[in-house]
Image (cartoon, rainbow, N blue to C red; front, side, top):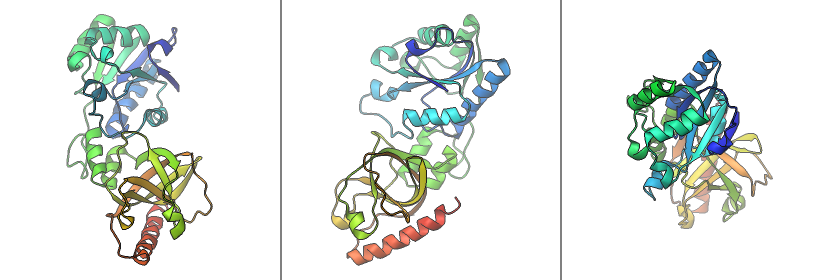
Length: 314
């Protein structure tokens, strides 16, 4: 899969494309439906499937300080799109100047001149251009003038986790913030992931016999509610069952909120400086302040036992 940042990186001889446009944060099941349809139609038409997305998130540029919690950084989104069969991802740098472009200019520069769109696939609530003035009806009208078609994919609704609401990144963020990892996985189609670099912490886990990877997460990451979770720690291509702690370590009167993952039954791991991924499978319990180190160790041993059971074969 090809990856381009900016229109100038699109090859001049790029052929006809089937295109879908959006932030696609999380590449959840609703996104997968739209992207999958674009790939399917591209194969039928002998064209190539292209996803157009933006960086940074448009809301942060238009309303500084309003960046939503991030479900997946751009490299992770590209990986997920590649797994769906996408031929290329075009990341458009989102600036104030770009935000002021009219729908007509966006269509001409991106869809017509750069990507030679034959078909554009979108959901019914798609908006584009200055002040989100463009919608799927306008897109279809512009497509008729520019020789491309528009296909609208109906939004799908979630089951129990989403209470019948459409799949959306906003829904996932809400579930993650509540610590509902099962619900988040239902909407995402996989466990929620947090990424970052392993840094040195207080090293209390090592002293207690449960050495943890202290993950300095990617800025704006959607961090689950404080508590202890079962999941996996992936480092250097190896996926390891893990017990994960999110919070401030109240037993030690901590103040900084951290994400720490203990790779179960692994001894002597040296992960400092590595970029790792933490996948959250299930919520085990809330964050607690214990009266003694012995009580904390007993609970940690129980957490590890439950995490081992839940991840075994999952």
